[in-house]
Image 1 (cartoon, rainbow, N blue to C red):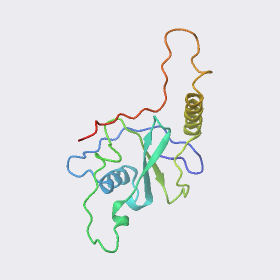
Image 2: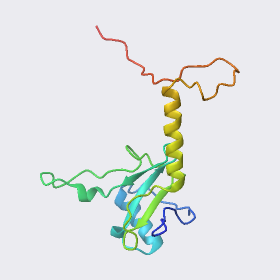
Image 3: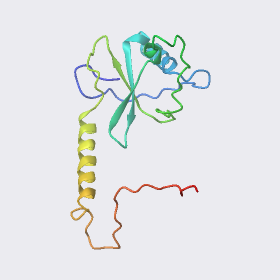
Image 4: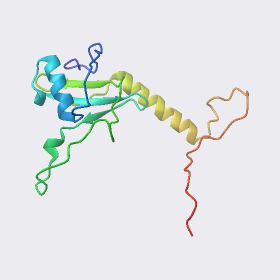
Length: 151
């Protein structure tokens, strides 16, 4: 749960959410609202991506139904793009007392800066990084595996 007015969170709590019956964002939002005694509509949720130091907002799909389509298939948090699994961190913002919709913490910004610096070093060929002279160096440029051409 985000601390209002700050870029940090209260200590993490473990939640057991049974996604076997309903794995929709609305189901998770309802479960968390019950845990904290809040209205589901007052919560903003995001999944933490620790490898990227980012937060992916879990939108309420029912608000995104287009005018042409009256009914939309229920979205599952277990599949793309969230792939929610045991141990994932979900950030919660209570919009009634915190209107800041940004989930990023100071630690996330520092992690993003490190990732940018590592990417820049890879672009430069890595002359500064890891040049301890031990072992062979492998070029770590972006590679794309390709399928063989069909005739």
